[in-house]
Amino acid sequence: MKTTLFLRKAVCTALFSISSLCFMSVHDAYSAPMHPLTASIAPVLNTYQTLSFRTLRLYIPGKKPPQDVMEFNGKSVEVMGFMAALTQLDDIDEFVLASSPPMNCFCHPPLRVNEVVFVQMKKGKTTQYKGGVVKVRGKLVVNTNVGDEFADIMYTIECDEVQ
View 1 (cartoon, rainbow, N blue to C red):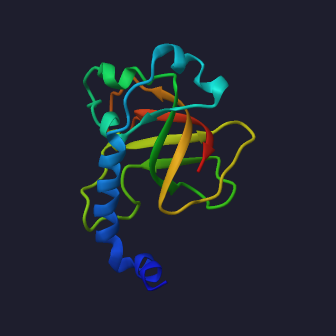
View 2: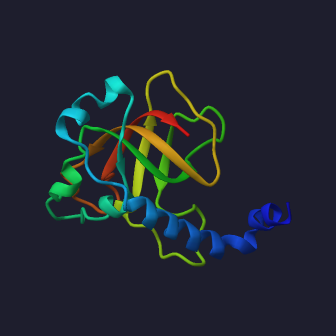
């Protein structure tokens, strides 16, 4: 009980950041691509390819998207990260999924455009704000024409569900 209360305080931001980075590193080890046949029937089977921010960071603004990223374009993926609500905390239909916790300015450098994913819930679906690490499942769309790394969105997920 004391540990739970301690983690909720602002003082634990540094500890939380370090643990989230370690968690993402372990998670990255299991992000091997799916066989093409399995990937093509993933939406039917309700299975998703695991995609990590480590892979998403490979696409550098102003350069051609690498094959490691493009193999996920248009595919059903699941990405773990931190929810950053844009306008409200209830009945959210769009938000940003980030590689580190929002408002974590103490122990993590500022996020870059390749470390965030714009998430749009499918038409008619909404979600509630969730703190901590969330898993987003849906179809990934990679923007291959990033002209302004401060204004363009590199990644969008048409979201099926948030866990």
